[in-house]
Length: 91
Image (cartoon, rainbow, N blue to C red):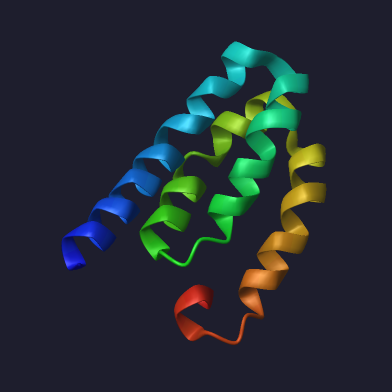
């Protein structure tokens, strides 16, 4: 069972690492419609490695959407993470 859980989080980490590389290729509208919802979902993931990978690659989506758009969409998610009752999610 542990191997399955490890594999699942490994796949999520790979997704978090690679999905943002598509932003420049698919453009602003498609990034907003297709990548941004996945980005926000991965930002709230329980696994800290997945969240860390998203933060490491945030510049890729920021280059396409711009700081203003990204800050408007991510600030509520970041606030929710910062105030979450589970300390592991806040970490």
